[in-house]
Length: 519
Image (tube, rainbow, N blue to C red; front, side):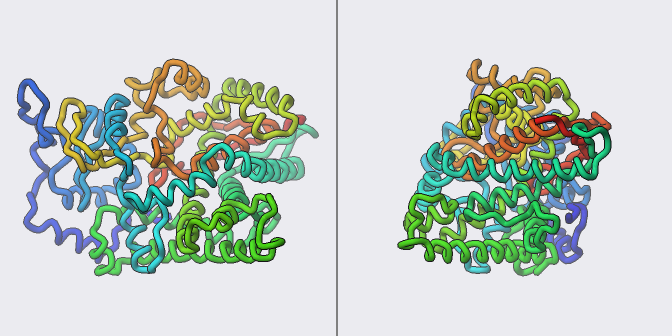
């Protein structure tokens, strides 16, 4: 992956030139407390900040390699400046918060068409390639119309019932494949064979296989002994796209194009490959639908793509745009949290045994129904929530309030970009009791206590992640079958070092020992 410490010379020089005439030192607000008025709501300008020159701040981020540690930067800045601060980076400015009371106020003012920060490199790619934009990049009434149609196929309960068996098939196949590998290549007695490995390549293949099965209604055979080069290239393209997004976020799109910087070329090329992969899959989906009897599915589930095509309410271009976004957003964002979840289960054996006991009991009573099995094992859902508390995939949720609000007794005007910082939130002792502990059962207690705005890894409200139900069930089902098949251990229980690309991930994937257990 591309290191965020790499600075293409042309790019770096161009950014430096934007700073000519700006103040030559960091704003005094970072050196001494602001003089604040007594009484009443404080002015927006009084919110503590990290420096008033966005371009100087951006240069520092590049120079210090801070993009890859943005989550740690946020955590330390909150410790230094308090529970609210402003940040200027290049052409972007934001107000950053982390406490549930402030988060609730932001979401109560998000309006009918919630808006988050546009990932401008993604939008610029769509515009230059003349691709339609999916719901992730849209806003306003156009976003809402498309989102309501997508919700029917991926979010509502009836949709989940349709695709849950497909996810379960892939999860069971994954575990059969891994079990065979451990039994044939591992060490130890029969029935308790062990093998230590880095599971991340297998988890990426699982996530892609599961996504394709749900979105396109077809398996692509990634658990064979020789996975396809096409799939490997797709995973590489998604990783490259994610790695090159953060450094490009804070520059005006015209500058990106004018510079023709190597970083931008890599980013655009990665997206081109993602679109090419999706286009090929979508074309096969259209062909399958056309060859079905009478051009219809006769009640069979042909994947989200088939459902959208049969409904006929989205144009083929919009279907392509949204399916491509779901594909691009559905691999790393499930494979990486699964790495963290397996690691935490392995280094917390008491937790692992509690979750396993519930899983085994529920599986026995479910008679092969994945839906019933998950319903009877709420600790699986708690495990995912606890994993995403400590290791949120995306480290912020953003909104632009539609009205003026007050946060921490500071006035925040309507239209200001406000970022909820999830990594500091999840690790704050002000919000979570003993936040360093991995404890899935805390979420059942949380529901009973009515503690809101603390689990936001998938966002909130009508603009929450459109692939949420696919991802949640995909991860729970895989953990369920892994716990049925294996006991997990690790040689070291030390904390994992993490890095940020556009998602949070381990600096080095954890190696985990899988030991077979009797079924």
